[in-house]
Length: 218
Image (cartoon, rainbow, N blue to C red; front, side, top):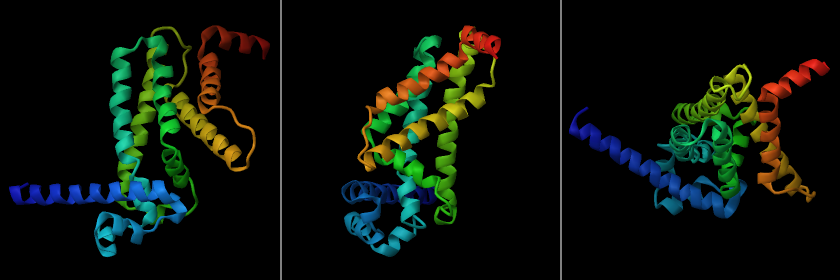
């Protein structure tokens, strides 16, 4: 790549980030439903047409906002494996996700949007590739924490990737349940308590003694 091409790529990335920062502010202030490409373009001091040069739709731009978060997860979860005792790695990895959900309510809503029917045509390949790769890395880190526990004899022999998929699904389900109860005005508990209980169930099922007991009862 020539210097001119590199400079053009850097300028494109800088403008893309400028749009994302403006969008983050607009979505935070107005919510997803109240935001529009026109408002975001105004906040970014760009034309509406310029926004569409970088993002296919409002949905595409909204989903792209989780890209940086997933990159941070990758770094933090790698540090957990390097710095945390094997017995605490799964819980420390899980805690990174829970703290994020508590501090950034828009994040789980972005993931929820990805589960909506017919969302894929609204998303660009660039955003889909980045987000799917980021989520895959998160699941890899969860699976690695389980695998480390298996190798250390803390957990029983299981398919670590399947447990990672299960843990990810349980977490998303916990976030959805909490949001639903809040929207309906139903009593709800602190998110950390709800998710901690969910993780405790997963960990107990991984414990060799518990698994042996369950098989005996069955």
